[in-house]
Image (cartoon, rainbow, N blue to C red; front, side, top):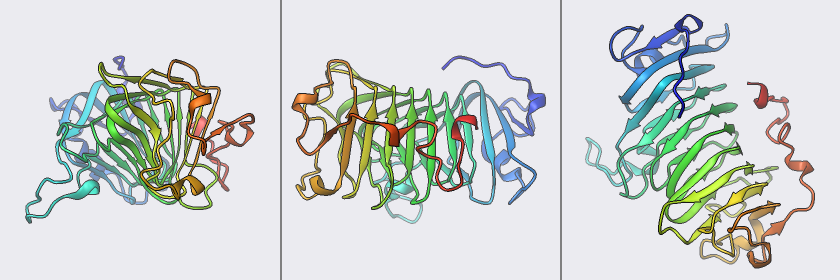
Length: 306
């Protein structure tokens, strides 16, 4: 991630571990945001550093925006089978390093990390908010790295890096990934959508690049966490690690009748339209996935301009 130098004068709060800002922790700055603020977004500058915090941005904090200056890492090391103080397993949702529930959230130049390693489900960032935008961010982990959560959540990712092993982009939300780099650290599945029935789209990848670590050679584009899962890859570059069949039915042939998996003009050694699973689709028309409108919804959200 390229270093950024930003004037602190443009921000409402500054977080700096050396005490040169308003707060030394990100959570303290979030807590300082007035609940249900109506005057507009609250812009928070985070100065370079690694912040080990289990961070929650609640739904009462409207319009929180996080901007990283230099290398900013928000990290924690919980995982699903880890025991809480009450002796109970945390579970997948409980494992997340960062929780985002506020509407109109934005993050730029931030790394979200779960540092627990290959220990099963371990979420780096769980997002349940509507109208969330991530630009030039990194999401680091292994299994279940990025959790776009929420029945009515729309999320936009631009020029981001996302890595993992199994199902490392998963959940119910509607998401657009534009010019993102998706990196597999092990054999498995890039995505596991849980798209609710009746949605116009689930996950849409535009101009993204899929790469893999050395020795990784069997990765599926997706498997359906729920029966009506949707994922569409448009103009994407697929490495040789992508399986020729492309898509997996998660051991249930009935999913083939309800899930919707499609590609449009994939390229690279992993693009094998003639060998794809017969229940998937090769698109000839992508008007319904127009980048400017696919997440617009009934309120006409212009995520490209946010």
